[in-house]
Amino acid sequence: MKKIITIIGARPQIIKSAALSRAIKTKYADRLTEVLVHTGQHYDEQMSEVFFTELGLSKPDYNLNIGSGLHGAQTADMIKGLEELFIKEKPSAIVVYGDTNSTLAGAITGSKMGIPIVHIEAGLRSFNKTMPEEINRIMCDHVSTLLFSPTETGVKHLKDEGFKLDNVGPFNADNPKVYHSGDIMYDNSLYFSEIADKNLTTHQELDLHHKPYFLATVHRGANTDNPKKLKAIFEAFLEITELYPDHLIVLPLHPRTQKSMEEHLSEEFHQKIKECEQFKIIPPVSFLTIIALEKNCQLIITDSGGLQKEAYFFKKPCVILRPETEWVEIVEQGVAVIVDADTNRIVNGVRAMLDKKDAEYPSLYGDGKAAEFIAGEILKWC
Ligand code: UD1
Image (cartoon, rainbow, N blue to C red; front, side, top):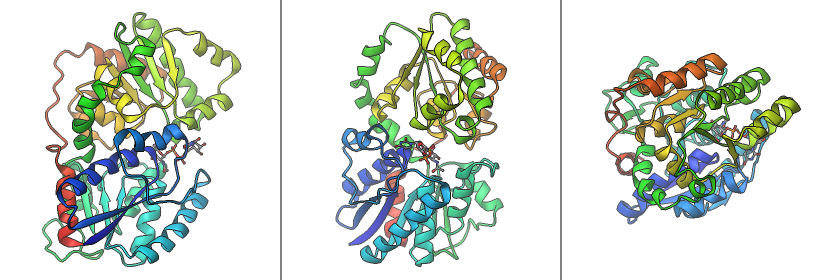
């Protein structure tokens, strides 16, 4: 029996891990066992616990309870905790997801101990190193043994950075293997989509069955920590409510954004937002609820990488509140537009996306079986 350690920490990683855990349980339970480690990067009930209950995930075997902090201290505390655990558990491989500080901590700790790193969501690049995520994902890719890229573009980025694509096993950190695996989040969206249809409490509470609405989220540091950008985004939201008086904007609020709004937006501006009846700001929601909101909205406005793609999975246009994206395919396809945190560009982006009549959403992210493939390769090579 082979043992892997999966590291999760931030909200999207808890969700992503569901796909691999499911594949291991249904196909490889006799050969592969998974130890789940939560760094505690996200800790609020609505940012963490709710996903385990709702997605039927096993509770983490360990929780390091690191919590928030400066990036250096947060990552360092994680490394310290993970090293002890890896010594104790002696895993055959460490699985990390995406680009958060938890990903980086797992990759540094495991690679220094000579344990193969499996990076799921490898090869994505924004080419913007002011994003902590860009640094995390580059560092992680370059110490990994198995790199699973969700897209062709990701594979190309890795090739450009010197990774060989035609090498043969056995694989290790000096002879890493790059795969185009498809996207495990596509696996999850397909799997949970039907279940989400039965989870419409938020729809009932906000009466969304009877009103068209836009779904919005904002949480990126570049937007939340910059008062000008934060204000520009909310000004755009208010303009959009005027432009589309029969539409609501539903905004599940990340705790980070809530704190920044309280700190950076004037009392008067806050009041304006509160008084706008079309604007529904709600606490962070569970995965099934966000899927239900995505499936039934008219359009998504977001700075989240996950939501951009889910918009595509559910055939919804998307307005991206960032200066660039890692998911370039959806922009090239013409169903998403990059507008940054610029009031006019956001409003015009919404208009352009809603006016577009010939939108097509061909399959870009695999066949919904990426997790099974990944588990099989881990078994073969680690
Ligand atoms: C992190 C990831 C980001 C990912 C996002 C998903 C990094 C560098 N960033 O960003 O890539 O898209 O998770 O949500 O790892 N907070 C709470 N309660 C919580 C979690 C966070 O109040 O449960 C607040 C704290 O003030 C904290 C701040 O949010 O300081 C930022 O949290 P952190 O996990 O560091 O970054 P995210 O913005 O969530």
